[in-house]
Amino acid sequence: MTRYTLPDLPYDYSALEPHITGHILELHHDKHHRAYVEGANRGIDQLLEARQKGGIERVPTIERALAFNVSGHVLHSIFWQNLAPEGARKPAGELAEAIERDFGSLASLRGQMIELAKTTMGSGWAALVFEPVTRRLGTMQIHDHQSEVTQGSVPLLVLDAWEHAYYLQYETDKEAYFKAIWNVFDWDDVAARYQRAQRTELAISNGASGR
Image (tube, rainbow, N blue to C red; front, side):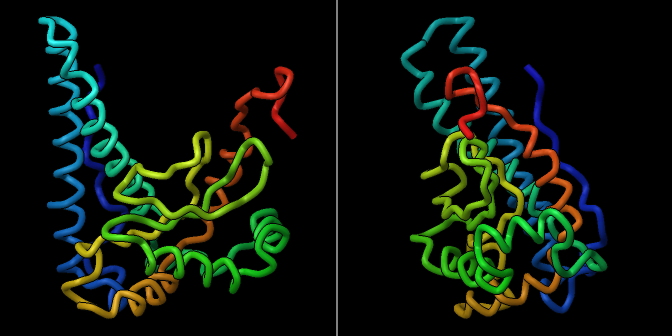
């Protein structure tokens, strides 16, 4: 099986200051994200061993841990690319039109994402997603990295609500972090993801898209 690898950050640790300090970014990427990658690869080794040497009863437990770690790896990888020190600070073109259609305004989307993030029970994420059955944008509250995910939805913009993403800088004022991070979201990256996501085809309605 292919192993997972930790991606390099596309900018320096200090590039997102003052909104995210270099110290937090270094710990977040090098320690926390790396732990999910290592956990995912460890899960693959355990899964292969269970398949090759017996012990099929271990597979459900292994796959639950694998889902947690792989989902953590995927969300963090998207998160780093969603951020940029000099990225586009507001959506444009087709993405802007879709946000206006599905949320009424960018301000409405921003408020909805922040509310989802700050009301997450324990650890989790808020996400802007493309839902391929209705061909619409939506938001999602994700517990941990993988719970309560709408199957088939494609994440476009993710907001990390785990304490390790903000606590050393914002302490208990996590809403201040959820607001500050909008200063470094790169809407060009989100737009590119939206373009690719629209090619997603689940084919669940009469062999077609479900439109």
